[in-house]
Length: 392
Ligand code: ADP
Image (cartoon, rainbow, N blue to C red; front, top):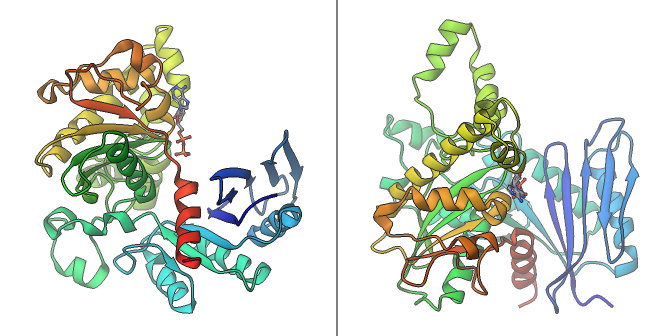
């Protein structure tokens, strides 16, 4: 028996993730992925209580895949709410909202800022409205948590009319993850909710770090798009803005070819010429691959450099929090980043780090400022917001 099932949908351009939570126990009772949507080899895979299962869903698009999800949910009873991850909420959304026509128009208006993501998110929302016409739906935005940034943190030093007329500013992403792990750090370390300073590092395929003061995001490394900031799997993060013209002239590349190179062929992949995957690189580096080690070194140096910059927005650093696939698992990355930050006084406890932290997730020695490993739970945050906004 599943109590108050809430369905979470993360609808991307060619893939779609879904999960169902039992809201009484917080348990994830179903999770799955539909990938290569619209292609002849489109595949649905999912895991419920038992073994992982998969089925081909050839040439199915978002709506077809969601019809399959609808059928999978049949045995559980209809969800009491549906939460959607929406990438870009622009300045229109500073928190999660119940979806109505006005909200759909708002998400559509933000599509120019996230042309690959928002339209795919909307496809998921529309399809679920047709499949579950009487179930309330909620949008949870990647950008919302960062709407507390002050103008000096979010404005780019370019002509101000670009902000006024085109919405050119820093928005930040991964907000649900940063908010969740920051809240967890406050709870675990028993910090004062109204008086604390944290730096959260979400390190997955995409990577960003955020300064959190008293529960609010005050600075973050991603900007107008998720390309700014840290080194990522295939994304470059920060580069000299002069690079574009240099490459255009030298290599005859168009702007969109350069953007594609910075998004898909750079970062860990570009540096290592081996892989975008940190686990593969860590294994290769351990067996003496210099290219892999160099990619990890740049990743860690730039992360440390950004952490230093983020600290400028805080009066005190109560903890540095690592999360995401790399943050939660890559032991040498955490160690190397802490080593780069001697001014902060971090002292990594090698044993705790190897075990991904003590009961609280702490990987530093007792005298050191805290560095924590906290697994992120983005889907749970979305489920929780969807339930909270529709059932209280
Ligand atoms: P996404 O951003 O797509 O949700 P994840 O948060 O799952 O991605 O992070 C994926 C990254 O985590 C990959 O670079 C992967 O290699 C890395 N990762 C996962 N497990 C390990 C591990 N044991 N050691 C090092 N890196 C790991």
